[in-house]
Length: 305
Image 1: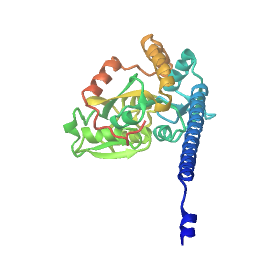
Image 2: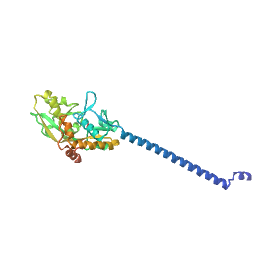
Image 3: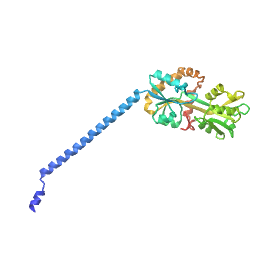
Image 4: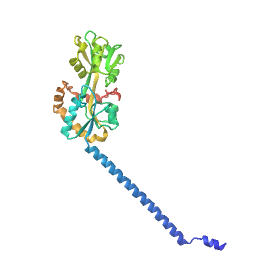
């Protein structure tokens, strides 16, 4: 019995050595964990640096689709139009290389990272939280178009009337807010709406003044013998701006600064004249005032480009 107890008894020196060995192993494990963490941080830093460098060096991917009358698609599928010319000029002045990418939805493709910039988009509160806008450099003014013998001079006159609007674009959101008692008739394009108005099938059309002017001037069709009038409506103006993702905001800001120059030095007016589009007077101050006063809150993410 005594021998068994003696055999099982550990000397103080042995216990001390075991404790020391345990501390060494623990220290080694901690050192290894720190080493692994440092290596992981280095790898992450290199990956992030590579991503930032790639984002900085590659051309900005600029999306385009049909946003009449400001963006068009040419016969060979190339981008054209006033907003496209503005971006090209800003790219040339800034030295920022760009690559044009055709899109189905500028907003969705920005959010999903398929493009970096879209030339011209309506500014809305929801979009402003998700995307990086330039200062507004264009303004869409909407008008009511009607036959002279059946005038619609103010929103109250539209009660119960059939008002034509485009099913795409932001006219639906604005019309719904301004003419809540009207009967809305939506069409994808402007031409059939104009024809329906002139045939007496609609009481009026609510649309972008620039688009209305172009359609009625270039393609009068059924309206060639009909006297039409227009009326502006208070609150029926919205700001438009160039927009980018936040990932490329620094490069986008450099591009935006040259868009400001294009507006201020008269280049925008010259570019617009080539398309017979009139630059809105005082659009800068008006759009900023509308935005700051919260008069655009009725616009939603469903509002189109």
